[in-house]
Figure (spheres, rainbow over the protein chains, first blue to last red):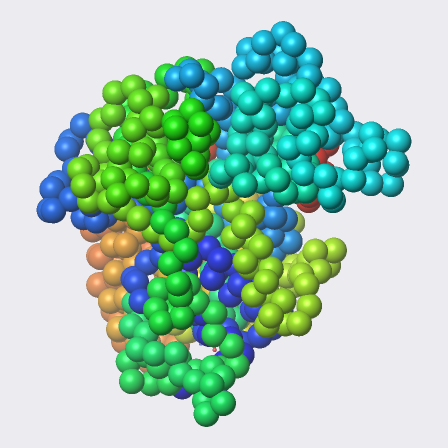
Length: 430
Length: 197
Ligand SMILES: Nc1nc2c(ncn2[C@@H]2O[C@H](COP(=O)(O)OP(=O)(O)OP(=O)(O)O)[C@@H](O)[C@H]2O)c(=O)[nH]1
Ligand SMILES: [Mg+2]
């Protein structure tokens, strides 16, 4: 403990664990501590007993829910984009070999109280019942334009400069109506609100491409999910860090981050001892005087004994309720996994409903989401105990989390991750 | 000799620091022993197969990477493990107490059918013995564990303990696998490659 480290990491959430792993791989000396006696912080997955402990006053789980240890319930509703930054990171580090993943069965969008499969390509647009005859055509043309757009080939640009033209103008050019724009912007480009409309089109094109490429990778949906829950992800990267020499200490009360006379960080104090270091990385809860609240997310965990209606009996899926459909400014996200991912007892589905808080009655804001679920066997929080967190944003995937990781990595090492040169371990036998 | 089917199992090692976990793996996988065994940097797991009469059992062997040192082993370590070797050092009685705690933890957290073996390592140091082998054997029997005293240094009972585990593992089904195929995440560029395993 009173050694000198290159880097001390506080909190074992996913971002912290990825950073810890990357630093150890670079042969930096890493000390990684968490005040909790479990890995994952806000991105941990809980057993049923732990869930009841956290959200009820001393109730025991009813027998009908089955065995507590069959459950691994996420507190953050996220899936992994199959072609996104987190997958790159998993492959780059080899952590993909410690975990197992399943593809998510379906990706849906709500329109007028009904649930539709999200069409993401020109071919799918033509088949979708989400749009009428004429919109389908227009949507197909728009998708084709976006798919074929090639920076190097001006003939594919149709006179647009996507670094300047707002996406709104391109939607207009293709004659897309509000409903079509809504599902493209929210269910394909995965924007949380409508602020993207006035920004240059490239952003939306990039997001559409990520969705389409991810979808193309395994079919059925653009998402992956790890067996045993998202909580396995931070643990996987923590193991990577340990394998490369990182030191792990859970249940370690952190008294303070220590600064030198010039105001630069120089160590971390825990249980009276100071561990010296050059850098400290931590989740916001370890720097209470340095963080500013930027918005809150309300979440509710539901347990069902059936799949979500109209999802083709999906074992896992995502449903997006676009803002307008619920008369709101931000979307409601529904993410659903089940016993098929070893996160629930046989015959049980776990559904997380979440959105960005807009009123002083956040739980009520989720109601348009609950309405799609059919009968709900159990719900957490059950009544007023609102469950709000800020350390992970409202997006349904890990792309922004990875952006944060890239930034921290660059700040510490002075360079970007060289994805072309993955660290290759001393050799695991094949 | 032709071994028919190949079954792959995940095997984890547990035990107090310095009891010889890594040394047992090194002996079994590479036939080596090092007096000053350093932890293998960067190896997530090692693989080694044993041939039984008509089947080959391939072990994917996970070592703790030191995370257990401050009670910080991640549960994902023994997730999905079908076998475990819990190691103690026969010259140090405290390490048996720690081994018993690991057995409890496995029974509580790991898959209910996990095959657990107890290894009393460093049996080459008989003159410094601090744990009675009968006491350990009795404990193992009471808890349904395989038991052998081993020496990574002297190559005593190391292959034998893996073979004993291989024999006890169920080989009728690939049972812990979920029904639907699990996606194999490959190199980013290999999207054309088969997606499932
Ligand atoms: N005499 C003797 N020494 C052994 C034997 N096995 C391991 N050792 C020695 O015990 C020490 C610790 O061995 P490791 O294999 O590193 O033990 P470990 O359980 O992996 O230790 P950690 O990874 O630190 O938890 C080393 O100095 C080994 O050489 C054995 O069978 N006999
Ligand atoms: Mg070791």
